[in-house]
Image 1 (spheres, one colour):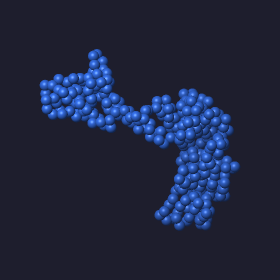
Image 2 (cartoon, one colour):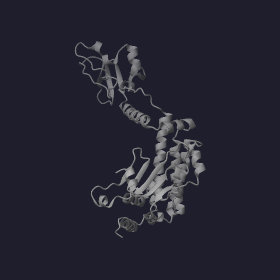
Image 3 (tube, one colour):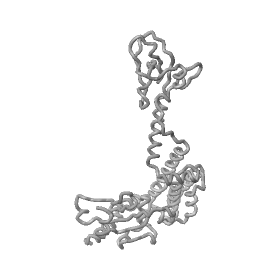
Image 4 (cartoon, one colour):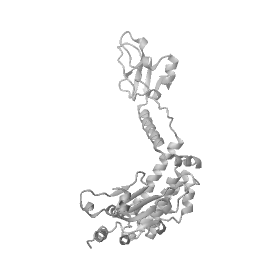
Length: 355
């Protein structure tokens, strides 16, 4: 089942332009996102092959089966509540039965977590992006050797400096664990051995740990080495996360982030504040306002007018205000599930000719 099948067989109950164009926040570069609701054919709904969602390859066209749509409405899902409240000029088609699904049936105090809670996760995401931009990681990956230091005088020097000073290669050396000392090793060189061999400090540049060797008793170590194993593990995690992000990031949005010079994803932060503002409106006014009256303010955020730190401070202040609003809001704690279920049964019965 695909979207052309839904259209050809007249299964759509709601078909809308969504996203930035519905919010009134679109730019000339904005894509046209489509969302809607469909009804499964009766036999398929009663059978084993239930389909709850149909979308295209890029996920900019997404349609929800009626049951899935109502279930998400009852959970106060922001995208779905926005879809139900799409401005009339963005509604391509709306079946009359959709009028039975009135927004006031669904709005509840669950919206605080659904809208403001999600916005908080986006602020944390923006913080992670800020860190990546401010602290990029070189493509050339560090090795275990870069996290090794050698005791020298009253301090320490990097292993690489010690090897250069001694005119040694790491492959010619070996490490022996020093008991009762975490990640501390005695260093030996092959010139000290009468027999046997040393395994090197590590097996190569791709190694994920140091190597240990066996050395006959009585040979004095040339140095004491400390391996910052925790530091290397943390670096590997950060390296993978950073370069996975580089590979998957939206280059246009990333370049825009660099252009405004504020080191955060401005589009993401704009939608974060849109969600916060909507959460507050729901608590105060008991309605979803999709077409944004705060358009100018939100577009200023998108343009990079504010610093990242200023936006985080504003968001934290607004979250405190939202908490207070929901404490005194007249919204119910939860939607009336039994009433919603009755309406869903009525709609499906009407559409399947069972009323």
